[in-house]
Length: 257
Image (tube, rainbow, N blue to C red; front, side, top):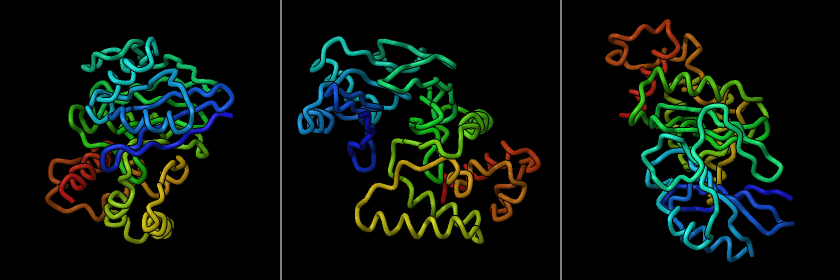
């Protein structure tokens, strides 16, 4: 049996652990810290078999060296031209990575960073800091147009696909989403459900792509009315007939929300 469980790191990161109970082995995704991973593996009697990296930021990579030192010769998959030098198996768009029964296709998803990749299949996908529940990553290196095209790649996944992102940002993202679409009844109900979960310190992830298409304003930038509530000062120099420019306006608003 293969399971995917969250290992908490820092204040709001999740390191995803893909484990095979029969083999008593595991892979982890974006280990920003080694200590919580080592504790989880020991607690569940698991041996680490490999690592997936989505991009170079420290909170996704700082635990890699210690884990490789502890579990020698394990592969570290990550973007081929990443500034992070701990990758042993560089991957690019359309490459395949097999983890137990799952074969993931690599998507190049620049925007948050230029090296960002996601590992996707029809059942579950690891989206790092590209697609969050009700949100998306800040544009630290890429452009709004790049990020919109990256999100469009993810929008093509089946509605039932489970989305495993790397941060517990859902409540804050939903607060912004409600400012964008104050009359979205599905969104309002979903936000109430997440508030209930978080009040009990329960995880809000994974989400599903079909849900995100209903609640995530950034994925909904193809809708002409999505910028109706956008502050006037952010509409200057934007052609709001273009989905990526609607996305750009929303991202600028969220950055200062």
